[in-house]
Image 1 (cartoon, rainbow, N blue to C red):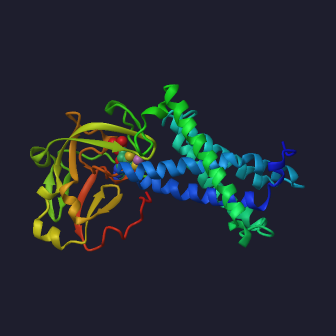
Image 2 (image 1 turned 120 degrees about the vertical axis):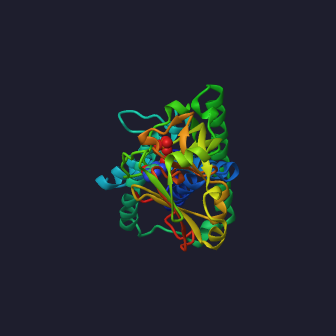
Length: 337
Ligand SMILES: Nc1nc2c(c(=O)[nH]1)N[C@H]1C(S)=C(S)[C@@H](COP(=O)(O)O)O[C@H]1N2
Ligand SMILES: [Mo]
């Protein structure tokens, strides 16, 4: 293989291209978690997929560099394993679906691989910083033409894989713009973002503090109406459900709402998300789904339904809805609990 003339050119530029692809894949991965609206989601997941394929396309060149090396450090081998695991998780998610093997879901393998690779990559870069990096001639006409040809080949590979995915009837065919696969409402798993715990709240005594006014669950249920909304979790699934819910603008005092910087939705567990005041017209407090009261794991007795937002915004076990002076953008883009 290393005898191929094209592969003999493997070197600094291969490493630089790989680094740029890895950084792009990492960045678009986070963006893909945040994206919900169809067009941005489609763009960002497509970019993410192309960057991932680009990494694979460079593998023969990188293998040539690795073979030339005098010693193989365990850390570098571990880095390769983490990246391969990450790629395998990504392919499994696209072509098989969100379910996993051996207690590990496709997304856990994908994100876990990336998060393990990150510090290893930093160490690897520091160790090999000499004679690497960017040079002026990397933007020569010839280099740009070569990059263009590489990008075209990767794009063709992407289209071919999409075609094969559809033609074979794999799970890839039916995925939403976010990349998620549809599951039945009855199959929705009770999902924890990171480290939260399921609290057991008594529906007969639990109250939600809405801007200082306590609401009992039966009072919220009495105001509720059916609403069809898609719950799209970043672990690779979505479900269409009919929620029984009350819109926040019917509960919040209008004048105070206009003066607020944000709506703060707080869980009994402390899990909190901030929303723009104008979102009061689209956010719902739900007490039931599919005509049945919520199960404990799914947010009983009351949870947020946030149309057009990914699952981690859908605060479960809501204990309060405050009007806050903190702007909604002044929060971590993803929950930390
Ligand atoms: N308090 C709290 N709310 C939460 C979470 C959590 O961990 N804690 N997980 C979120 C995530 S990541 C998703 S996808 C949805 C899942 O809702 P489900 O359990 O009904 O599937 O709840 C969201 N609300
Ligand atoms: Mo989620």
